[in-house]
Image (cartoon, rainbow, N blue to C red; front, side):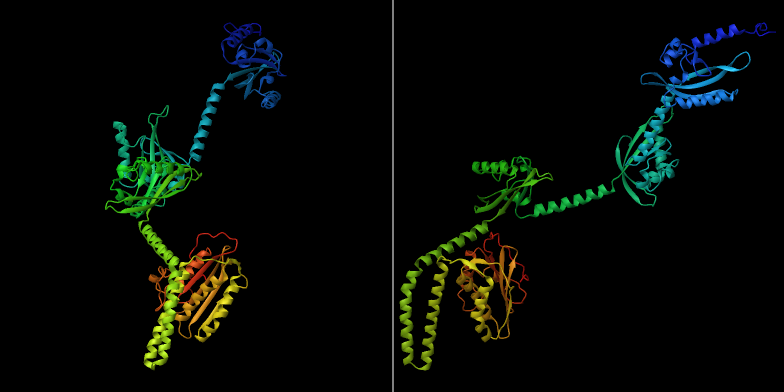
Length: 636
């Protein structure tokens, strides 16, 4: 039977060609016939959807021109190798094609030879299936998987996923830092291995009850638990659990997020202890202390302030400060405080004195201040009101003013008083001495004693007059070293006669001071003679001078005598106060007056020798005189 006459019942070439074309019309796959060079001889209607062109314009074009440029050469070489091999196997390749501008499609190609009557493969038939949807879906799944793994790798708080039976399905890389287990050590094991008792043995029953009833006390909540680390130590963590229903899965998954709160709990405890200590200090503070918001609302206040007005904390906190009982009774004070708060809120430190009458009817004085409290950026965040009871200081100041007024009155009348008394005292003194010459030795000693007492009275009057009169200083630039040398030169004979050892510590050069030479020498002589009068033979006197910073010169006179009791030091420089038997109590008072008139200060403290240590601090010429600081005892 010839090829032109197929057996009965078998389709001939025409029937096969008709069937092929019918299949090409009904299939959604791309069917092409192309020659050995890859030129398209036939393409079905799917070309319009897949290649973006109608079938007719595709005839004669290279099939591989539709393949994406990144894969074109590889597809062409694969086809050529397969074609040259002339094998019976099909060519299976996967490529992307450009359907339209910016639109890619993924195709699975199956290529077979279409042989002629002699059996030579002169044409080829390709069957390409569009798998774009499947590829994109797989890519989405892959990207989702990559993101999921990246999340598990990079998340800081450990994550563990368990199934409905408590088995751990996934774990983030960060579990190792918290629990000490690598994720691989946890996968497939029961989550209860991380739990202490009683939760470890009861956890499966928790899950079983949830499966049966749907009730749980942990889902979508954050709670604190203890967990076991790999090394056996307990760790305090914060756990949040959520449920995830996975499509296609019969049972849900549960995701637990863990956070180590050990450091936070320790910090909270430390903060609570610190706040308790601060509150104790705050409430035990004797003076008025409070805290205001920037606009003036009272946020807190200590017990001392509340006791002062007999108020309760809840009665004043939350109110404008000027409306609290400390100020509300006086409209003038209320307005003054309101203005002070506005100034402090603008960054100004405000301070003033205010008086009031306490519950016992006594007048009290308070040194009140408002200090702005700034945040890290420098902005005013709070205001700190403080009140210090200065009633005793005011009383002391009043007494000092009264004393100064009395001394001023003494100064005003001192000249007249000295004139009125001096001549009679002189006459009495001469008369006593004249009478003494005519009496015996016993009577003569009595009269000599009376004469010496009158002379002492005269000296006391002169020193009182000197203290009461205003100082008229003759200021000039002075070298402290030269002043000290002159004083020591004057007193050296007395020091040697008393059998005392003199030690001098003075650098070769000191900053110059501006002062009255005679007055400053008088101060140093007074200090040195005080030491001479109290020391026994063999005692030591040390005189030191040095620069203190860039603005002051410090002079110090020390001895190894019995010293001055601390209880006496505070009153030592006041007029008519003395630690010496027979002293007038004016020498150190005059010394302090002279030093202060020079812008300096004088004091007494512990020195390098066991006895008394007096110091004089004078400002350097041209330097601004800052607040006087008490020098350290051993600084000389």
